[in-house]
Image (cartoon, rainbow over all chains, first blue to last red; front, side):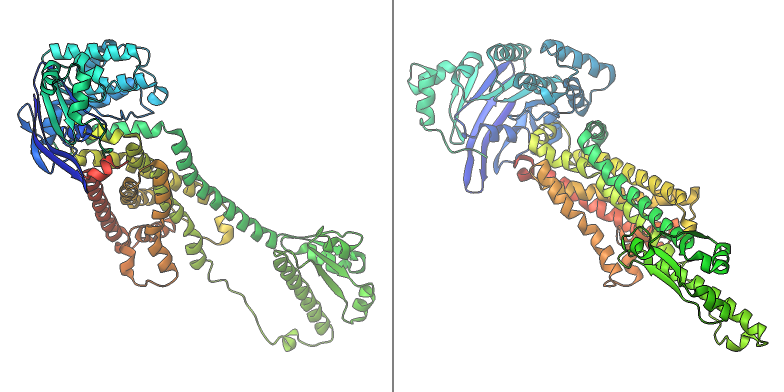
Length: 245
Length: 390
């Protein structure tokens, strides 16, 4: 379970987060929905402890990120917005490297690596170097290494951005399975359809705070709108905010 | 668990670097080019010297001065060659550097005991000709002197009467000054190799990671900035040390295969000397890689890092230049990194013991500066501006 309370963060004169609070419970996919620049990526970076909030706190399964960052990160799987692969390592080596960083070794690590390669249908690219990977292949590799330590909590920053339809469906299937296993999944997106198709709970983020929170139906009701899209536009004020960091 | 996972990062970084062919190629060039140039310079110097000693003298009008010609042939390293038909033209056209020519009246003048004319024709456009002309003139003077002595003795006069000076040339630089000057080049090449070999690795594992966005993904794992810094540092330091050792090996091979004795240079290295040089180089490899990581971490891209580093490596070599210009004097400066190791390696190559300031002093200061650089890297890896600023 992930809990963010009253997060504030500014970069110089730009206020990125202005009292953002939300909770991602176990066994649910929680969507962070908001236009570009609303503060989603900043919020996620605070969740995995690489940005320090000016005010407010985050806990992962009750572990305070500010006080015990490595312990908190051990409970997290993170897919960053830019996947950041190493061009000279193979997909398998990426998974292995992250596994070792989480303390996995030997036969257990090999077993887990093979399992992920099969689950994400990566047999064809497992032993190829990442330099020539397509967008979808890069995304799968980054997702596999985020899952290698079987984390209780998963943070995904715009995971389906730029993926083709079969890949998007594959990712959705994986995330639903993780939810059914009782994990907390946070999924950020600026795409309405993605969020309404997948998320059990949605936090609409606008101008650095949560404008509405609840199931997609709750949010429609709160905004008094027929569709989630209309609710989104009305809650976020229509115009996209300034570009974030 | 801080610092415990650096081994995992070290292993990954090392594999990553060893697969980077372009970086390995440029690092190899930085390591190999210096010793190749050294071998070339040493070979040139030795062959220049040999050219000066072993001389072939084209002799025009040889039939006019058969005694002179045969006397020349008996001298050490001298052969008398066939002269071209038009000696002056041949020399002007650079076909011959020096030609000795006997005047047409030579035989008659010589027989009569009058000064017999001999010309040395040479082309002053070639810088190496001066030494040859001097050698030819010395030979002719010696012959002239010996004939004069014989003539005086024939007249019953002691040759001592006309000999006013006893001149002896004694080369004293050969032992020490020349050794230091020539053996001063390899240490510099070896030290620069340590900086060159780790450079691409340092740039790739810092600025390259920032550029690709992989630094954020790496640090989102349960590792501390110290783990990341130690892992990257150790991998770059291994490459820097490898570069220094390869350069050391190449330099030793070239020195032991070049005709140093012909140049009057003393060079003596045994296994203990090589072990001592390795120990002197280890702190340099640790410092060079830490320094390069720190500088490169300020760059947003690999290319930017390379241009920063190309300038930054001048910094550690700056005190060396100041010392050689005499701006910094005193043994205390020998404790500076690069300066001290340069002095220690120079002494070790000549088979001498380096000073304490050059070994323990410089080693300690170098390690301390390496630690300061690593602390700087850890600090930067905690900085939001570095991790996310692309």
